[in-house]
Image (cartoon, rainbow, N blue to C red; front, top):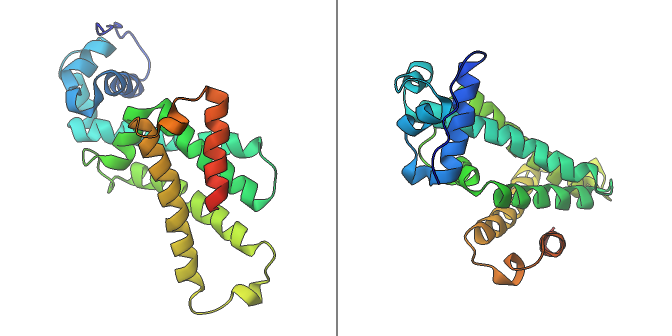
Length: 207
């Protein structure tokens, strides 16, 4: 596919470069990503991306930051359509997690499987931290249902909670990774509606 060049005229150049970078990433993957390709898409000089983001890592960090913000919103979209009980809300979050990965596989891999970003960057740390905090919050709500604070109180409570978080995260992420890689034909070959139903059913079996 030929790269589309859009001459840049005015507005927020940094945001335009992030837009172009996400398009470059989506089309060429992390392996084929280049600042020159981003500049061409944005219709600016080859030096413009480095001027605004210093280097490729800086630009990809900005793309990942935006990705985590969208990731959080996507999960919230699914929760709004789900029942209000804690288990349904957590299943909806997991479904949003997997659907996001299938909708934006290159971005998903950048966010979760690449060393090309800088997680010490404050903006990226904040947006990724929000995604993780949401997971912890909804797992904690699930654990609270049907139990009193007294029943959950104890020296191992936080350890148990974080192990529960790790287990649910591992299942959702593993499911997303398998589907993005095309390794789960029993689900991946279904229609969009049936695929989402199957993903939700898998999540319900482990949550």
